[in-house]
Length: 155
Image (cartoon, rainbow, N blue to C red; front, side, top):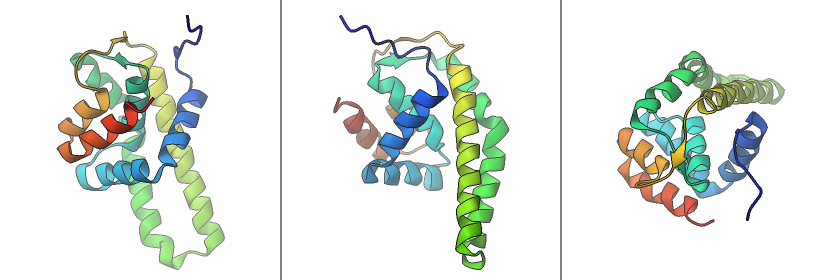
C-alpha cells in the first residue's frame, strides 16, 4: 500500500507541481490560451490538474469558495500583467526581469490562497469528469478539455 498522502496540500508541493507541468510547452500554451482567451486562471487550472492526478474532487457548491479565494489577488495580478506587457518595450532588461519576479510572487500568493482554501474543503474520490474538464467547460474552452485530460491521464 502506498504510504504517500497528497493531503494536506502545501504551497511548496503545489508550486513545484505547477513548475513541472507549466514547463511542458503544450501545457503552458493551453494554460495561456485559457487565460488570454477565456478569462481562465492558470493557478486554478493547475490546482485542478493536481486534484485530477490524485483522483480527488470537490462539490459543485465549493467552486465558488475556491474562486472567491483568488479574488483578492486576481485583479491585482491581471492589472500588473497588463502593465508589464505594455511596458516591456520601454523597460531595460533588468527592470523587466524584476517585474517578472514580482508577478511570480503574486502568482505564488494566489496559489497560497488556493491551498489554504482547498485544505478547508471536503474532498472526495473523483467520479465523472476530471476537474480540469469541468473548469474548461465553465470557461467556454471545451477545445482545451482534451489537452488537460490527456495530460492528467498519463500518470
